[in-house]
Amino acid sequence: MEAAARLVLRYLTAAAELPCYDCWEEHPGHRHTSTLASIVAGLRDAGGMLGETQAVARAEELRQLMLGSDHVVAGSLVRHPGDTRVDGSLLWAFVPYALLPLDADVAVTTIARIRDELCVPGGGVRRYQGDTFFGGAEWLLLAASLGCVANAQGDRDLADALLGWIEASADSNDYLPEQMANQPQSPHMLRHWQRRWGKTATPLLWSHAMHLILLDDLGRPPVR
Image (tube, rainbow, N blue to C red; front, side, top):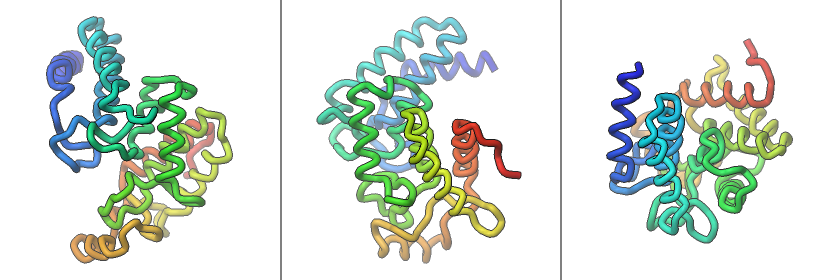
């Protein structure tokens, strides 16, 4: 395992800035901010555990790149250079990656934009404005991510509300889907994807994993 970790560290040290697909397996050819954030956290933490000072130094170099004008516009992290929208995955830069304190100006502005632009009142969190995959509806895993951020900010009411929405989204088998389709951004594209693939992926392991993480953050035991 250590040999594998060192191999990944060497790869990421060299390839961190290369264009790639984003975490949703979309939009190749960009340097995505949330991807960069995950690389920074990985190099920092694995490099620290393994005593790889070059990896730790590279992590800080990339963190400064992430906080530069290519990735921060009007005080907010953006999806990638050239795209000023926010993406729900940007929450991860703060929780769990802790690349900035939650009271830092960039964190405050980014989280506020995600809440204002992507969080559906009484519902979940969309990936980004203009998303059309299965209509661009609300993703459970992002609702859990925002719940973790809200809890870390001391907003227990929002965290509890998001947890309640996630659990209410389970089907009769207690399976959690990838996203809910009741408030899509594009009803036309929702019908397109449903004709192509049927209903949204259910159960989705990522949704269940993030549900458990939010439960743990809130200090609640999982329901058996």
